[in-house]
Image (cartoon, rainbow, N blue to C red):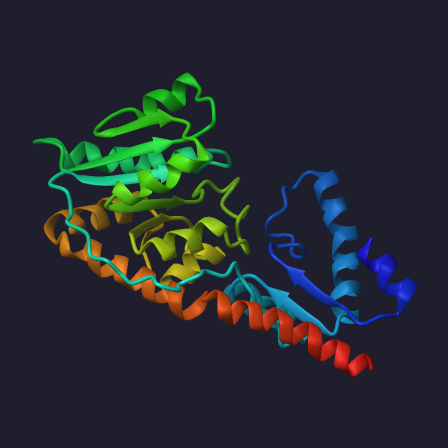
Amino acid sequence: MKKYIMKKTGKPAVTYLADDNYTYKSVSKNPLSLLHRFFLRRYVKYIVRESKQLMVIAPKQKEECDKTFNKDSVILTKGIDFSGLEFEPKQVSDSIKMVYTGKLIYGRDRSLSLIADALGEINKNGIRIELDIYTTDTLSKKQQSSLNRNGCSVKGALALDEVQSVQKAADILVFVESLVNKYKNVARLSFSTKITDYLKSGKCIFAIGDKEIAPIDYFNRYDSAITASSYDEVYKKLAEIIDNPEIINLYGEKAFDCGKENHDMSVTDKLLKSAITEICSEEK
């Protein structure tokens, strides 16, 4: 539709890419998926080439798109209203409370089960860390058994207005993507709105995922979360938290500062408006 409108009107356009819409890395190897990506690449290449401005959702995507399309793209993510907000240190619970709210699809349940595995060792002499999982997904028996153990438990679904209060009571917010080869590139260049919500909360973020995908690359780039890309790293990082619980407030503040510096709504709004007004001015 966008290609048709651009050709029909001849007007300048701004294009926004918020996922891996071009490479073959995030595509399964079945013939239909590969054929679909072949034609999608042609479409994307035309749209980007003919657009006056390209916007992307994450630093890793900017680096790839700028190199691929010879563009100077602009990073634009969900803005956060920081007016009246300040970082508030939290009194960490004796039993550290981790919370995950979200879907378990695309192998995310396997990443969460790595935490349950690690808690088997960490909690063997008493509960030191708990993980509560809230999801609307219906779990299989295998998922039930892999997630309900060692201080990790599935609590079921939350109403939208309950999510914020549950997250506020937590010590650590958990963000996961898959480490399974079949799924690990699904979010390769995506940037969930959950990330900006987590940053705004000023909570310590514990993130699991391949270090080459955009969300984990982002957290590492700005040192705004504790990240892990394997079981060994999950166990090591959780053990460090137990030994040094002050890390929780340290990374909570880092997350908040990262959000304020990179996602302030007043800045993101100006980016979008300036891109559009600049192109409109050129048209005149």
